[in-house]
Every structure is written in C-alpha cells, then in structure tokens.
Amino acid sequence: MDIWIENRQTKEKIDRRRVRSALRKALRRLGREDAEVSLLFLDDEGIREINRTYLNRDYPTNVISFSMTEGPFGDLNPGVLGDIVLSVERSRREALDSGVDPEDYQDYLLIHGLLHLLGYDHEFPREGDGKCMREMERELFYSVKGYRIDGED
Image 1: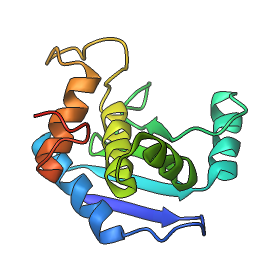
Image 2: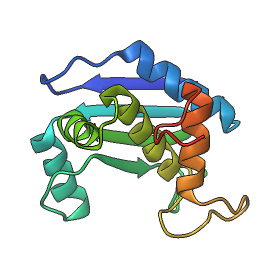
Image 3: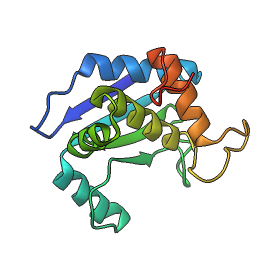
Image 4: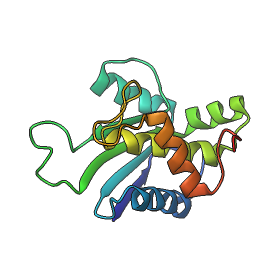
C-alpha cells in the first residue's frame, strides 16, 4: 500500500503520520491493501485553480478526487486508485464552523475523497454493495478513529 503526500500550502502543518495511518486503516477495512493513492494539500487558491482547470468550476471547494480506475484505461493498473486534493484552509474553516476537530474533519474529507476514487457517488448506492456514500463514510470514519464524527452512537 503506497500513500504519497505532497503539501503545497503553508497555512498549517500536515501530520503525515496521522494522515497515512488513517488512510491505511480505511484501505485495509475496504480490502484494498494493494492500493496506491496520492494526496495533495493546498490552500483555497490552489484548489480553486484545480477546480477551475479540471472541473470548470471557478471557486474553492474542500476536496476533489481524480480517479484512475474509471474510463478506458481504468483496468491498466487496478491498484492505482488516483489522487485526492484537499484544501487545508477550507477544511479547517468548515470544521470550526461545525464545531468539529479540524484533524477529524480532514480525515473525514480524505475518506470522502477515497470513496469517490472507489466509485461511490453522493446520490446513488454503489453497484455491488448497495451502500450509500454517507453510510460508508460513517462506517469508515468509525473504524479508523473509533468514534463517530457527528457524535451519534
């Protein structure tokens, strides 16, 4: 399992060990020990540029995923899942606005991005397991952290 981390923002230090550990636990839980994922941490302006360039949306967002498992070349290397891009600035602001620990929220967004790489969608249950994305996010967060981000039992 390979997890590549690049930090191109200066607003906040990234705890690479925590991030790697969280994603490794999530990937193990999903049975994807063979996976390769790259993570890119940006500020709002950096993710806005990515959003504008690749998705034609001229605004910052919290997380963007680029799957390598879809499209005509998706089966070339099934272990390479893709890239997750996260705005540290936006994720911290959203966490504080919601009363959630910023590192927990960052892990939650990384799990969200990982599920997109694996074909989960906001609207529809994934073919094969029938689980909706929100349900999987909660299950994975709990298995990674040992508690629920939303405080539910």
